[in-house]
Length: 621
Picture (cartoon, one colour):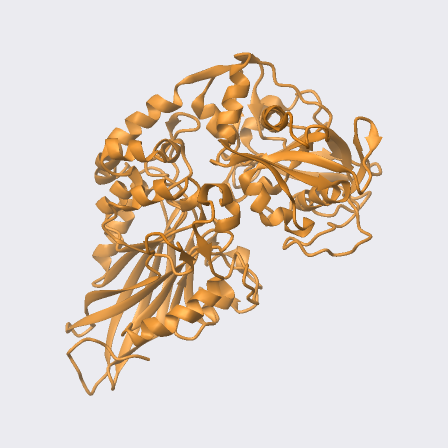
């Protein structure tokens, strides 16, 4: 407990309610508009949350509005305004203009704030009218990043007396930032473990007079034990003495919520972690987090959190966008529409992601082929030119927790920039690594962890592991292989090897021959993948190509070579056959109904709609 800076002092207890409003993972979803489909969208967005924010403020005497990071990247508007010159021409970055209009008090940085590099980040943040804190991120030799801040807030207690409450805010983000965006950051950023940074800074915040410490943490709820590279560290973070509340994000989930029932030290009904209030309000403006803290000041002028209440208020689908946010981003919206409608080519066949988890996918293979072709050009006349060259790609939009509309669906016909953004969401760059045959097999084993183990002979078993991100389901084109779902996953989701003798990947071949464990091959992939946890169990992987070229630009130029493309599906992978009567259940987007007769698809059987709006398919195995 620390001394309050308020001059008032009473022998009796004072109580006040502090309301904390939280957004997280907005990902540039500012207006209710889907730039990937180029049409209005009824779902989420800051403009839909703004009226909820204003209403929640009117309900409470004492209120703070905070954002938990990942606000700069996620839509074509974010990509367009990644150029500092675009920000300068507009005068202010559109997300900062919108956040200023809504009246944020503070924000932290998520991992995606660093996707475009530091010049773009610095220029975007320059006009923020709110505090920005980043406690485990530093820039040696560069501009100082504020680790924490203490905001003096004039508050009124339940008896109508005024106080000054000193609220400490510390920002924290996944330490993997330096790996995921290595090529964009070029060694100019250093990160520290989330809990290590909190242990270092929280005592200083208390010593500087913070009455309350809130961890504004762009991290999810996961393992109970800390380690320096822990990505989802909210549980051990909440155990740190001196932290009063934890605001979470990064996972695009909701807390309180059923996904977190049963986790150690987590009470999903009471909205607490280690007994401390916590919340996570989804993503893309899907929810507003509302946390009410009842604070009591006792003799000695110290404040403590007593009761609390947490609610997640969903953004309404039917409300109009907030006029203030609309005005703030109107010119940016117009510029974005002009940009995404630029023609880049033509496709004679549709490209979609509805069946990427059960069959070869033409969209994934198109991205992989663009990577492979460009990598071959750049590796020509290098020592690696003679090695087999493969390409890895994955679909980013496969429904899951993001809902039945979260699928790529590009119809046959003209291709525009928005279609390329739909097929490849992130500003990752083209890189290539050298791997051995053994590492290549384990890469595929890690990717196959998205599937649950299937019992032979049993019908209608759930196919997908719900907590495994679909963007980690890499398909490595140039190979042929089978995935045997009768076997358990070789690796746990955190990358731990479960059993040396477990293998799901079978009949792995290249050019019709088996790949030996010691054989060397080159795989064209992305800057994100090389630093991701998916490949961590493979050990050190030499980077043989760092092009700094965005994959989306590589894809655009690949299409431009012929202007008109005819996407095809080469045979790459399939499930190993199982006894008659074995089947799995896959939930996919309703748009899949138009493609159920496509060549190469298993003889799936539609089973109707789920309550969430997905189409449920029976997949024979």
